[in-house]
Image (cartoon, rainbow, N blue to C red; front, side, top):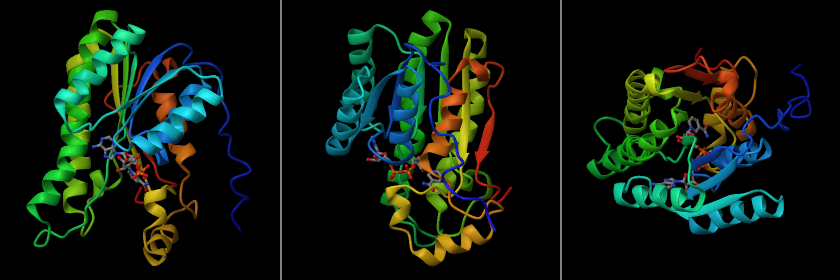
Length: 261
Ligand SMILES: NC(=O)c1ccc[n+]([C@@H]2O[C@H](COP(=O)([O-])OP(=O)(O)OC[C@H]3O[C@@H](n4cnc5c(N)ncnc54)[C@H](O)[C@@H]3O)[C@@H](O)[C@H]2O)c1
């Protein structure tokens, strides 16, 4: 009934629209972050892989090097402000500029209101909200200096709709939307665009571990009848990071196959 997949989906380069842009991608070791790193590199960007898992970060770094791309690996916990500032300093020292930031690093620690632990709540808010705040605070002064910057924050459809047993995650992802719009208002005058992407269910290594019955339930409620691929999310992130999206800021773009539209 549904068209063949993934044969019909263009995931190849849309041209060199990010040529020689320096792009920091957090959580680039796997899943959506890795697909974004590869996509942006294929469009000419010099990609900074920011990842706290040294092994996966290194493997993406090698893959980009093998493809002849300019890339830098900086192991870093985005929740640690000092480490994030050191990462940005390293990029500035090595490459002298920084035009694109993708805040993608994140994880969930499920829990209902009455069962969520303080530790889980704090860890989830730390990586998503504090992480996004840390990186934006560190890169924006450099973007202002050049009157140019593109920031894409990865939220989730749960940031708009909420979900049972995803109390911390939904709150954090909703917070990212507020943060995105507030910063977009603040920095538009400097030529900096700040947008958010809200993925639906996307087939990443983390989602592969989710019980099938839960995924099937979501897919049944998805007009396109399947999960998204990391590349399909990366395509939209890359578009938002390009000059093709020059009149977009504060936008919250859903990439969900129609789930919970
Ligand atoms: N996959 C989905 O269905 C889905 C749906 C909606 C939103 N999202 C969001 O998209 C983003 C990527 O999702 P994914 O499924 O690719 O996740 P993933 O778990 O497969 O990959 C996340 C990456 O971020 C890294 N990371 C986590 N915490 C970090 C930290 N503190 N510092 C540095 N790196 C860190 C991990 O090591 C990992 O490489 C996340 O923000 C997630 O919440 C995913």
